[in-house]
Length: 154
Image 1 (cartoon, one colour):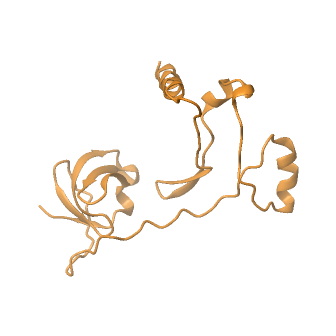
Image 2 (spheres, helix red, strand yellow):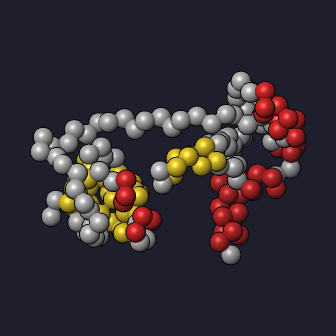
Image 3 (cartoon, one colour):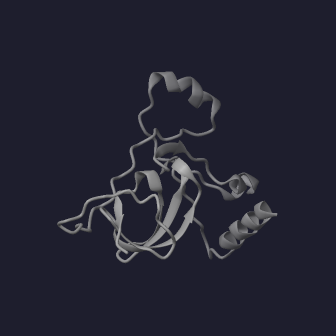
């Protein structure tokens, strides 16, 4: 049922394009402290090839990858490191990250990089505990608690 809703939303988005729709995706993503490989949407495979024009940026390929490439209809770009998040927030002079394992929804927090924010949601347990925070400067972010460098303000 969720898959059908995703498919419906995908096609609604495509049909709203007047002349062309440009689709892109990241081949690698940094998620929960790890780089993970990403694939293009499965719904693209359902579109007739007549309507598709693949334009991938070719990048240097290492010798051991040549056999893999021969099996694929396109060249996958090599993984790259994610760009660092631009630090626009300067933490207060007395900022010291602290144990925030007891953080709860509604609490005000200060993050060393993202600034002041309010905790919207806490989910998961132990090392998998995630918090969703709305930051004044950059909006909503979801952070894996074990990597959060922040302190509770109230």
